[in-house]
Image (cartoon, rainbow, N blue to C red):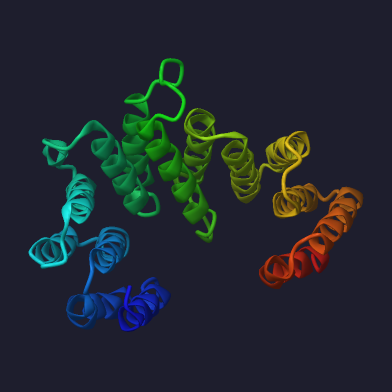
Length: 292
């Protein structure tokens, strides 16, 4: 990406949730004009898809942007494939299943996951249907390790759960969607990834259950995360975040002794981090230590 494009894109991402209309205006003018490479083009398509699909709920605006990008001189074969997935996702958001016609199977699955992510907050029932339909294409018992469709489902589940954890005052349907997504991620990372991806999926499950108000499940998955860290002698960063999940679960359960113990262990893990990791992990440790 060019420095100018990267700066403009970062500014649009920073404001898109609070001012989606303003971000959309930037996308349609300054950002589109600044595209100079395939990487720029795909990054802008990603933002446009998310902006019009999840925040503005106006798929025609996103489809118009995708059409402009398709005609751009920087649009190569990889970009065309990405644009086709985003187009299908925006159409699926408005229940047009024919949007998948002509896409390769893996791209169909990715488009369904993208549409589920767009709808997770505003229409969790529809989002759940889409995520479950995507998962149904990849039976866990018969899908080979490393399958790209399994990876697509795992990524979608993780991204949806992580985003839903940030939604304040969740409705029951939103909580159900979050847990479904986190569970889906755990199931499919066991197929598509290795122990590291599974360990991080346990971390995600712990956080999602805690946000959902189930401290017992949150603690169970934090302990599973920590067990994988120990079993595979994971780097200190993985141990630090496993202990963060355990501390937060203990706090949610009002187990002050367990919370204090996990915080102490997290502080020890923090000391083993390199300087760069300490810089961005410090706020997490301080937040843990100041919980009452």
